[in-house]
Amino acid sequence: MENQEKTVEVLNDLIEINNDRADGFDKASSDLSDENIDLKATFDKLSSDSRQNVIELAGLVGRSGENPDSGNTVLGTLHRAWIDIKASFGGDDRHSILAECERGEDAIKKAYKDALQENELGEHVRSILLKQQEGINVSHDAIKALRDAHKAL
Image 1: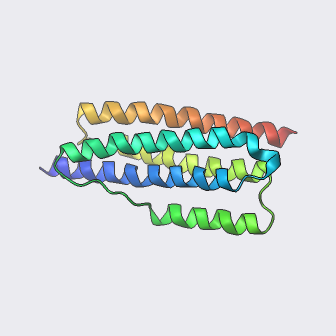
Image 2: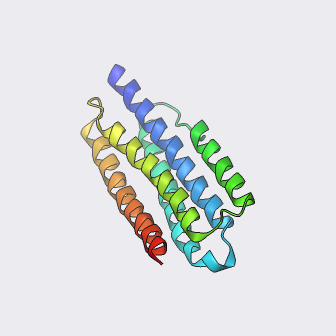
């Protein structure tokens, strides 16, 4: 029973950070200026990816007989507030947007790395987390490459 409780805790933490990620990309997408509108499709896809992750994670929690979390983390909420403040002072240039998105991607990468270090996870859960982690790593690298490409200009 303790293993199940730990697994549910890990899954709920990942649900919250995926909600943060989706909301963060939605926020970034809605705040884009006309010269950065090309990022909208990328941000919308990454938001959608996280919402799909939440559906999978919530299903795993539900199978254990527990109710999945549906909220966000305090840090994620604070991060979005910081983005709002930064944008109000003219920090909406492409490099700043991508740097903040990469910072969020760093956080979710760490969350998955930490989650996968838990020994109590069953193989089915572990395989789903590994698949989701792979997608997050690819997304992180894409955001970082976009940021670095703009920085070089």
